[in-house]
Image 1 (cartoon, rainbow, N blue to C red):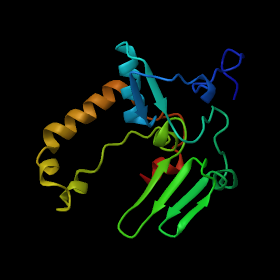
Image 2 (image 1 turned 135 degrees about the vertical axis):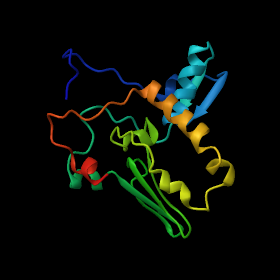
Image 3 (image 1 turned 90 degrees about the vertical axis):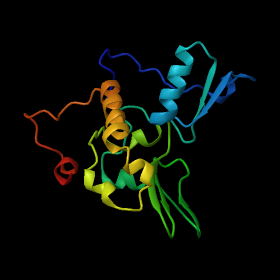
Length: 170
């Protein structure tokens, strides 16, 4: 969709050719952690280079249907890689752990659909979680939730609209 002003929307990324020979700080990864670290460091007056693999996916260019989304998938397994290395949905499938991560400017924030849901506390009932983490849920995790909510300012889905299938599933 075009920007509200009707003009062209500028890119966030810069061409490789514009990289300088030296930066005070280099941040690898533009997801939540890297993006915030780069932003705060730049606002503190440092010369920052933020690196991300993949590409910038602009508003209106996200997959809208299953067929479009399937072209954006890549799979990494011990046996090798399948799919475009620029696909925004990157699955890592291994014997002990699987993960889905985003590939492109914005990292995994590209694929989380703006969902800000607190974990069900029962998740941490599993004794495989480190004791230090489990012992700090009331203070540390709660403080982290509060900081994230203050910064991101999530809000409920409007009552006037039908909930998307993803929200119903949650």
